[in-house]
Length: 90
Image (cartoon, rainbow, N blue to C red; front, side):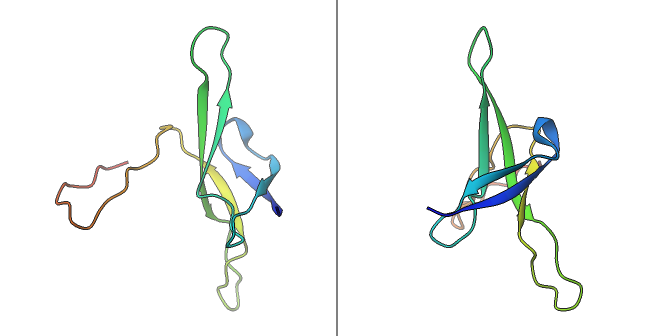
């Protein structure tokens, strides 16, 4: 499998670059979870979301990916088109 060096922003991993495995499309996963063990109780999970790293000036092409820290620690639920429930504000 191929891996890509991906930078992390925010949270305890701020400034680090880790090799992240890419999927069949060549992109890293949308969410990256890092379990942090605690001496007493269940492990804490740090959650990072994949966001564009930036865009080129001339053509506006995307330069790659980076992971941004999500302090809430929860992934958004999938929103199906046939449901009429209001979208929660994050």
